[in-house]
Image (tube, rainbow, N blue to C red; front, top):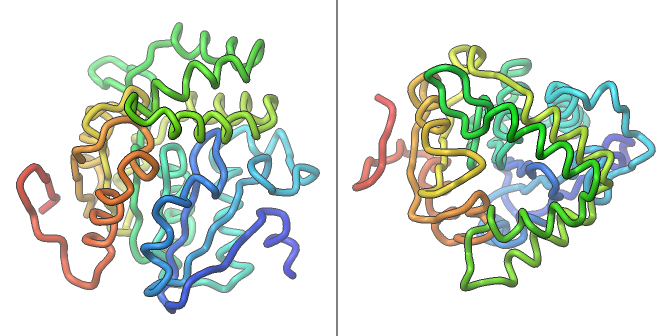
Length: 278
């Protein structure tokens, strides 16, 4: 097996020829996609992986300098695409992986067909008229809590970001995902995520993209999704009925429907409650 596939714990599933690649967000691993991937198995070649430092990746390959920025994580995506000689890739990225996927698509646009951003944000920090959802003090507190008590912080965070009080088992699942991540890696990934600013890169994206925005998401507010929609060529924005930052876990049916509508061969048809780019 190719060393990159071992390093990133790459799994290749599905019966189709069209490649669809799922990229997990902060504190998670490929297991976070388990609620939706079955819906793609018959028609797609499904690629799952863990970023180095996450899940069952090879932690010995973790380089704190490389992964100090999101470009380092984008290298993981590009390495996998090149190792498998993939083309025409449909990339599904959750949270920070939305911008990681964009970075990869800016570097090798010819390898991508479409991008799907689930709960994306080009910048989490508020900046003048831009509302990212956090101020400097918020981020400093997050970093302090992760450094001092990552497990305790994750226990508090999971139910808030999942936002499904009637289904506590989903928060428990997310908490288990968080706790499986090495705290030092989690801190570095959080800093790379929350300090990033990719607003000025959006205009350069050539690959068609979909922004899936939850109705109530404290991590990536609607203002962030709308900024992407307004500043990215060929971006479509769908405001979902789902709430929370993990609709692929909390609302799998709706998430599957919106993804399939966008990645199908026909152009998405605007429906009530949807905003689409012209």
